[in-house]
Length: 452
Image (cartoon, rainbow, N blue to C red; front, side, top):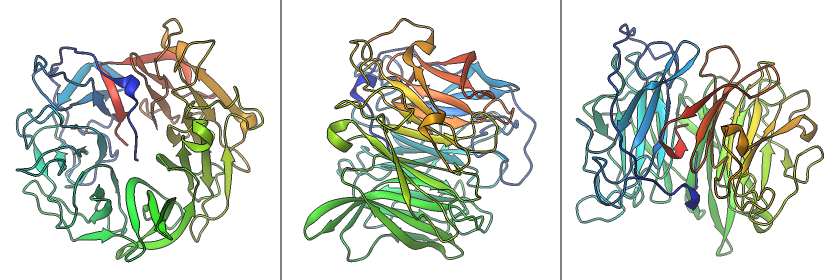
């Protein structure tokens, strides 16, 4: 999922370390049950960008890092964390001041050993004399957590900023997770399986050949109900020598991916999430367009059908029943994520508005939750989560809602909502009424984005 990191998430210098992890029972030699269970103990883990390291090197690394909070029965264990960067043992490369290790992240059990693996993009990585060549690293899961790593080799023509965005899924339905990568304005499909020695299945370019297509972001999910993972590519297409913002649907198929419909917008698509909002068996594609209408922002939902996406609805802060009102530079749709937060079987959509001004406080931010239901999403079933749920006084420049992740971390059948902010990021438990502050977890040392 393509993301743009807010300037308000600029960093603080904190000391980081590694808390020893208890060994879990060995996982079976099969794909991990959860694509984000890095130590195979049956509980989901959460990975996100760590506070950006300053020039001094006092934190022990340069150029970005990833923080991992491991799961336990009932939720996250914030006493069991791990910081991963390019100076971690076994991780390829060397951290450098202008790197962005962790700018993009996704996960899957790529080598099918029962432990999920973390895939990390560093699109600003210099390789030899080539500036901004970019890199992608697989950090391998194990019974003791994430350990060691292997570089994903870019294909000739991948160009610059390799690793700008990442997505995983079983796109060809063979039971082995595959990896999609953005590099050089193109998307690339790496088929499974993957090995620690660096081998992969075949690699192919995802492109509208000869049609002036440039890729910038990815989202993966199941849209047409055939069981295979589908891919949505965010980008632009040059038409009559002018760039036109578009998203492109590709259907999972035995041969990899099959080109499908495209949808045009008047502003750039920044992010996307897939969820079945009306419970008809087909995933709907929610696209965040925060620059739309002078930065007021909208979310466009492209409805899923058996033949792919068709028809759409638009939501913003002017939609009936939605709290607040649209204002320039609010950036409604800056971040989106989907999941069933109340356990009713309908996916819900969570939308970040990180630059919302509240009571005269600039860029305080907040989050809208649109609950799914018969007919899909509705503003009448939406609710507002303010920055103050952090348990802190209202504050300017908190950019609450700049990053979002909806997943069932507690294992109770209701997806939990992780919300990123400039200072204090939190995890809200899912509940029958939607996300609740009861049992709120503060996420330590977060900056940047969550892993998909």
